[in-house]
Length: 86
Image 1 (cartoon, rainbow, N blue to C red):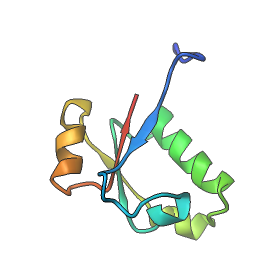
Image 2 (image 1 turned 135 degrees about the vertical axis):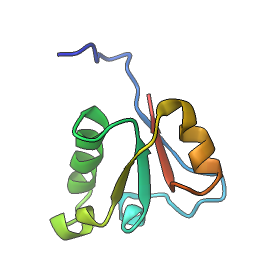
Image 3 (image 1 turned 45 degrees about the vertical axis):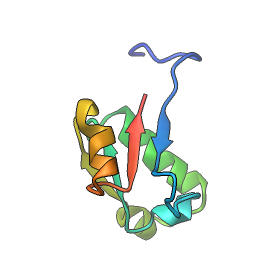
């Protein structure tokens, strides 16, 4: 409804040496995104649920607001564990 289509892509990025490879690996980790209560938060929470995480486990994933222009830097500096970008 706000411009997303088949060509739109959201990626979840980690550092090359990160042990994060699955939804379960996000338990207790920080996921950086541009805003809460919007598209990225919904996608993240929905994917975690689809991957079998319980509501309690999902609640431990720390969704963290990071401006898109600073997201890569925040990831490289260890301020977040996963960068959400589109």
